[in-house]
Amino acid sequence: MSRREEGVAWWQRGWVVAAAVIAGGTLIGLAVPVAFRSDPKGPPTAARTTVQVGQLVSAPQVSLDDVAWRDFHGVVLPYSAQDGPRELDGADQNLARGFARTPRGALLAAIHITVRASMQWGPEVFDPTIDQQVIGPDADALLAATRETYERHRGDRRDGAALGRGYVVLEGFRWQGYSPVAASVDLVSAGPGDSDVTVRAATRIQVHWHNNDWRVVAPPGGTWAGAAAPVDSPDGYVRFPSGGG
Image (tube, rainbow, N blue to C red; front, side):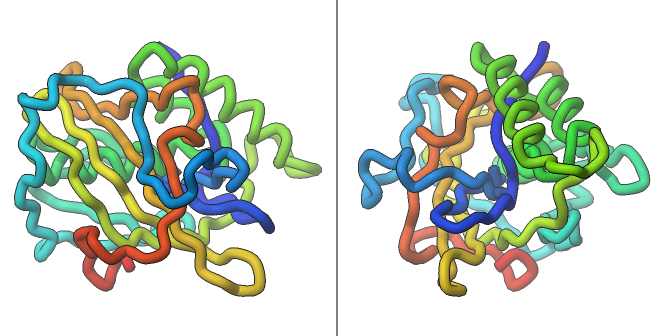
């Protein structure tokens, strides 16, 4: 099944980061135009849910004490020997798979998949990530949009080249719900905005347990715009350790 959307950590004037995811920015950090926000003060929304609300644990406990933070093209990501990712493909570890069926595994999957689904790293990264690790009725639309956005920003770079390093920092998260089947989490990312002002966004990411691993559910319409909203600070979110923020 194929997939699609927009870039992680792609900073331009007048744009606000939306994770990451996320991202997508990245996250994990996705860059989403401010104009897409109908309610800049409101929380991110998700048009589709994967399970009934009553089946979800609203805020499972997740310890990050033993998580290692490592650089991924400029974005520092969390890794756990216990919860994943357990499989990292290629010299640059561009693909990340193998997440535990636990709350922390779901959180790590949301971060790694959303970040790698960004146009920023080029089609050698986002194509297989979206194709293999993003599911749902809007997955094909996400991949098509990501390819189109990449081509718009590629300029005179060779076809397939990365657009550069990321400049997003993951600051925190807040559960919307978790079950062994599906989970929903808001991820806060930050990066440079106009006049050196830090801008932040929270992106709602849903994951589903499918074929023995967590997969990200593509955002409605194949765009993260409706799943992200600017936030003033990471207050009220679970803060990542110093490695992430």
